[in-house]
Length: 356
Image 1 (cartoon, rainbow, N blue to C red):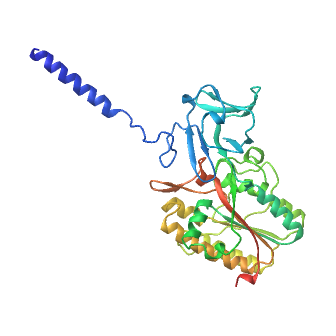
Image 2: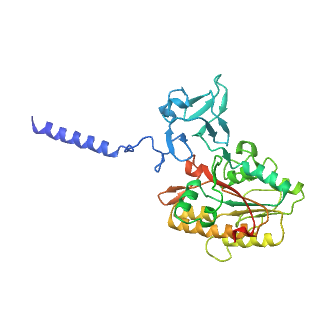
């Protein structure tokens, strides 16, 4: 072999090594959707405690059933679309069309275009239930609704197991409630106050603020209830009553201490319906992570606020969240179809000084 051939082989070897080193590495677990989500994920399959599988349109045959893509056993399953559609899966098919996956019935009629996720064995409860419970309780008496923004069921369980929720731990254990897609504040709040899914109430992302339907504040008004809606420092949606906004007057970076104070003052003024929205758990989760020490300590602080408020309230109390929170490399986030974002705690208790 002459010198020219040796040099040529050496150069070819360098080229091959260069190409292989520039290729994108494949994750060890190709089906895992936690913690490193990829942009080409089209549809996630989850249950209330696990992120099960990611489904990519280009890897699927043109039509398939749920049983074709997962091994897990399930009794019920539902699909959610990008506009907040919700449909229980029965005898239909999923179809991979281009870069999206659609759900159709057996005859090929479109049910959900661009499915974002499937949950198997979903919780029986939904955050939309809050509207109907509030409506029924308002007919009988006074209602206090406490919205803990960004408080997932997994955070609730972790906080109880580690001693950060001494008050709520003593109450009836929270049930799991399913949030809506997209699990962000606008969509979750709208679902809670209207009892309808995003496709029906018109709020399916952070961009919408105008409800298509009446809210619980209209119900309270028609019942002649003296009502107040207590918010953080900005309004989220346009509702029948103006929210009472609370600026961060103490400069601690959160508005929850101001929301707490305003809620206590509202109770002293004998309101029949108090709807109060704490944002701090969500803010801390974004900054530090859903299960971080900082977020757990903030959850503990909110637990003391809730105890004080509930002890002064004479009537029904409903406590839940609009969405949850998942971990990221630099803190936490939400807005994805994954169990941490989609499943929240739901609690109904009686207020009063029996907690003192």
